[in-house]
Image 1 (cartoon, rainbow, N blue to C red):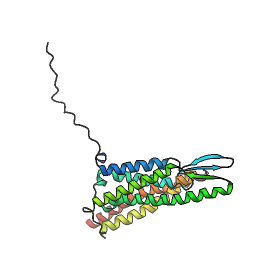
Image 2: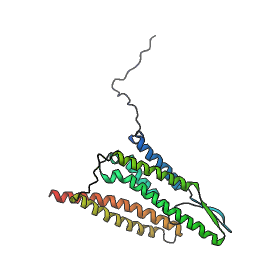
Image 3: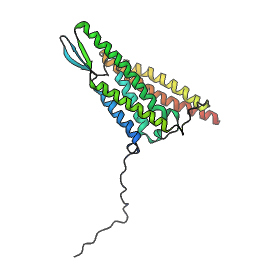
Image 4: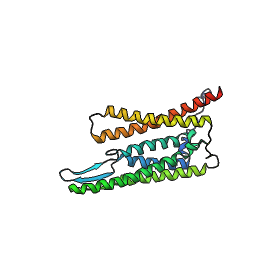
Length: 239
């Protein structure tokens, strides 16, 4: 007996699944690979130290000054600018140049961290201690270099569609003023909130929380303020 195949003409054919656009662009893949390297190194210990009576122990970048928190937040912003199709294909100068600027900021911050870490290690000699930088710090630096190089390539490739002339339109001024004001308010709010929630905590914990909240709320406040300021300026112009 012949078996007939049952067909379902009302069911749509399955379309082949495609990778997200960010994973099909080699330049975006370069940025994402650099970010992955940078953030993995950022989350792991940077210093290995030895002190009399305590022995060996490790410190992460989130302790002491909490600078790893700033790199983490900058990396998340770069990730958003790279993963978002709208941001990646934008003609807005701030979005196109953002990964390069933020990647350079990470490199400069890592330079400061390097000098501070060496000074801290030298200070341990007074009490008979010593230490060294772990490979994870250098991995973080490598990732930041890849991200910065990727940002430079992206800016160069987009040079024909991006204008670097700074206009002084009402909308631009409103967005700039709103963004600056929002960033200041967010930064101050982050400090106040961190102080409330970490009262009585150890210094390293309170410092890390203060850095993370203040920078995060500063970014959020800048975005909200820029959008709000530009919208107000645009609406007042249309009246």
